Length: 420
Image (cartoon, rainbow, N blue to C red; front, side, top):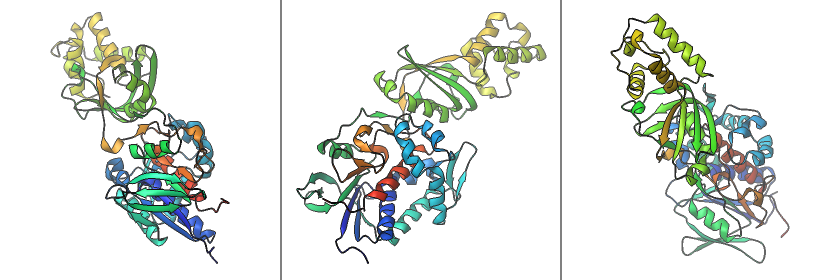
């Protein structure tokens, strides 16, 4: 027998975390025979927009790290707070959740995990089928203008300009939308400093000219901001039309998000293109090439791990003519080549962003959230999940994992009856 009194749940935001929370909420209500009415209010015309475009339309659902202590290390902000939630629901639970519903997940060499179909619509269809199965009501073009706490402890939502919905529990899962921060502030919450978290670097330099699409499998990057703060990353790097991108650089941008914003996105980046451990390794490598190719033109004999086009640009930057024979290269020129391979210093002039990589750092102050339930410590009945909190992960499926975990925990607790 279901309890006779209906429990109303409002979820603000029809993205990954909001929809996932709604489904979990419905599951718990069914398990516990709770009479429930769940409405998901989405301001735009479509649900799950980020899910659709993420991972180039493949949807990078999570990352292949199945140890919670290792998983949290990929969050520049929220690492400490996420440990306990991840023990309850982590990446392996995400994979099982989807596979239990007929969606098989695979992992790639870099650890990113995708549906085997390589199509984000597979994930969207799964969510929509689950929402329909549990009779979750999905309502589009619904702007929540205000949330007001009533005397009986319930919450009144003003929708658009003239509609109201009275809820027992409200989840705010609006991602980095300003409307979510505004609602939270009106309920007494503080918002930490907001800054872009995943972005590429604008760089203009001879060494990058006409090389868009050139990649390096294992570069080392050191970012120096205001000659004081330093950040380091290692991994794949990509030259673009406007500068640099790729996994290593996007990770660097996440860890240095606020510092880069404060410096107006001006900084120095030092690149070890081959990721070799010491300058002596580079020196020995170039010396071997020189000794084996004394009569060859320098433009035609170069390290096998870089492209000829990149090598020719490196020679231009180094002020060395490609027609010269290796035997003609003097000590000074040799050292310039070694330096430009091992510690090439470039000026960062600004940032660029991809829509699919749009992530913000900053949000609800984490001290104001109970991470056992995702409920507000300031206003009972209000819950938070996903990117609206001051939590962000590096690129690779970590932001979605935060969305699933926090949504699952919020959804697990919102249906439960409280004494008001």
